[in-house]
Image (cartoon, rainbow, N blue to C red; front, side, top):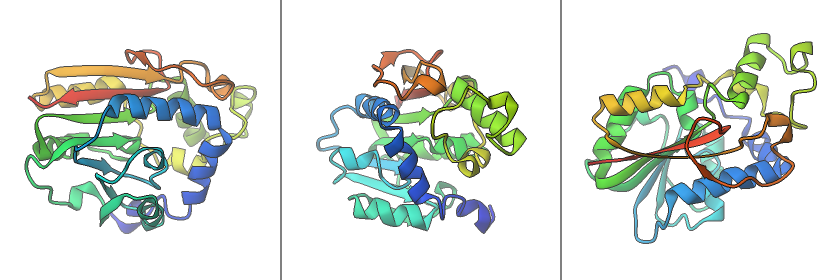
Length: 236
């Protein structure tokens, strides 16, 4: 993967955090999902793949969380927020020890990876038996996914097709356009092919995108209606 691909978030760290701070209720909805699926992490060792700026982790105890992040801009902020960034780079280029972590999670980062099979396989090998691989994402098939894909296709959010459908401050187009965007069913299929049998699913942001910042939404079970979905895959 070329260097431009590695650095796609460089220069956008502030815009990334600003988007969540302006859309504060949306952020809180996603944060509640994040907290719900991680559960009690006391005494556990975690790895965040594509940890970004560590924004979500700044609201929990991140002392036992390691991170991998390709954007140096993002990684430096994450380190200031308490994450031990073990690699400025891609998970594809990192050797992970077997059965090292209780939880490995991808909070939105799967949407920037073209081939999920090798990174999920590597992650599962690095998880202890009974541990969890957790995938949190905007599903391709969700209203947010459609919005990002349309903006990517059009090259702008300022188009008649999107008029009257957008939140006040949409996700930065440069970041939406650089995403690959996978469906939830695709990720489940990859994990099943890797031998995972036990799953749990949770979701939030079930409202249309232009209304999701009106109030904090509850986390509910399932994955077929949320704009942000968590897959919890347990390693046997």
